Length: 403
Image: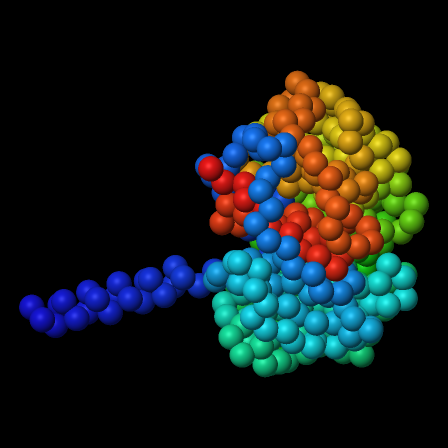
């Protein structure tokens, strides 16, 4: 009897440990900007949410925060050097770690969101170096350089890809002729597969994983194309044109139930594809004029919400037909995330709005101005534990948005 009790408590302890280990990545669990938080405020009584704290001193950068295991991870640049900042839930600095040179040629600062996965941190610098760190000690476990290790080339505005991790693999897009996309062992950094793909430069996009088809697929924007790879072998499955006049498409595609949505700026617009069951064919379903530049989009119910670049409106699009349900220019265009049936819109003019996810009207419930921080309002917000995190250059702000 005692033996059974001991086994039971050992099993309970093990399961508790497993549950306690959280992971975090770019734009939430499915990379679609929709967060699973519930019980959030539907209106901010004072017109804006309560500012719990702010942290100044992050340096230059546009990265979103990663939130896992009671800690906040965010990167920034000071004097051309990239630093990882580790904060607690009250905004206290727990640790600071130098990880190497960052992007300082234009729009200076860190770009890629930290990926927290199975006790490790994965940081991709604007210079194209992927570093794997131990989550507790912050010791560097391994590094890979896309230029020297994979014959890749950097981009005009630096590398901005946030690495995708699925199972034991890290997916990265060097954009070289031999290593168009690669999969690395996340523990050792060793190359598992490489694909010649289309042999063209990468762009500013972070890849998306499609795991519910007969063949698991990784999709990313490469040059003026959307390209799909077999996630297990690296075999290129298909490519479709997404011709951006600037040669870049920064937005991670949204996937749901065999349908893949992509949007790009410069007047390119948006498109929905239907994938066949073995992932080998992408059939165009509809197109729409919404041409989001860097703020991405979200799908809530049967509708897509986002904003344009040349078409400077906020849009609601019917996922099923591509019909524009409304467009509004009540606030500047920008980034968007969603949680608990509401839209959180952060404009490039520094306006922050709480908006109903309503296909009939762009109904702003509350709006306030982000006055802290520096440079462009480009970082994507994050919601975690009832707190809204907004990064504006040198400053990270934490707002209470839960009842």
